[in-house]
Image (cartoon, rainbow, N blue to C red; front, side, top):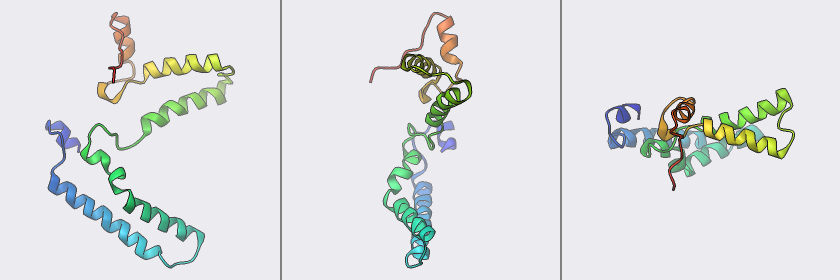
Length: 137
């Protein structure tokens, strides 16, 4: 995927993508066959996971053919983690108004993936008198 983006293409080679999807399906089917009739709570969880991977393959692999979708949700988790850490360590965010202010500042400092830049870029733009504003959808 990174190679396709670097080369300016808007999708991954369809043949390579089909091969990787077939491997994905094969791994899920092997997981189902290995856990189907075995007893135990953990084995049932593994079987459910393998079935879910197979049933929701398009959802799990969407990032491979739609580059606007991130392959993980680290950005979202990072934003939530910061608020929870602030609440736990410093005891802040005691009021709803304080929490709203904190979230407003954090949302401005967390640039969208389309900017593909450092977290400080919105601040740089702000100091230059060109505040960043999200595009209207």
